[in-house]
Length: 352
Image (cartoon, rainbow, N blue to C red; front, side, top):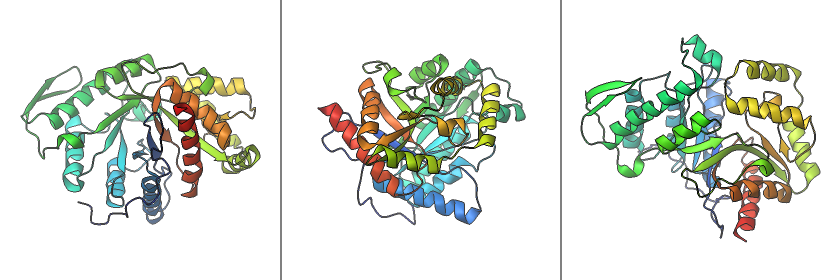
């Protein structure tokens, strides 16, 4: 078990207070690298804020420019008592046996459940640099196999044999065993048809970078759980919220050029779709705000405005059937109070 657990959460701003839907909310771990002592400290604080707010877990990114997400997950587990790391898993980086071994070992050491954010793509140049030329839809087929191998190793109490197009193992013994209640939850991008098909086959939550709430068709009652990746800046009134938003995400010409280049080389459906929506919006001050995305300051849309305005938009997502929300990196602990107010108002509205 962890030798340095954080105190149990003292106030859960996301707790269920008579809400109709049961929501699952994740925050996001800091990703920009500073000096090691400051980065580790920042991760610890954001994880503890997230746990105190009542988040289910915290997303930990992976790409060629970042530290290893599994080691960051260990840091999160050491400094919290209940928060679940949501680890981004890219098949290019390690064999599924190695990934399953880490999952089981974390469960053995901490008695904690983790979630896996199964990543088929990422930045195209990252894949090219590692000589991975697998086409977009084929990467999702590989991801399905990868996940099946992990699940077989974790779930079967016997040596595992698997024969697939991308992975093969024969009579692979596996230890330590992972208790059934610690088997990892699965999330995967559901912005493309290939991603949705993979989510269904894997039994994963399909997460998308959403269109404006009014454009989101209802998805409830279908054969798969859905989620969205969204940032939120909400205050008592619109002007205060927009002041915070503009201060946090100023205009950045260099960032705009970087985003334009990233869009040209990306084969991600969500990347192209958000770029199209941003161009159509043309900088207007709407609650659904893509300015941080367009300036390469984050990769998700934002909802900005008064508590009531943002809650109204958030209610559209909840009513449409989205039950999992992955929030952007929090700048401070106080931000969770503002976001919690929005979720409580939106959920009460849906319940009513």
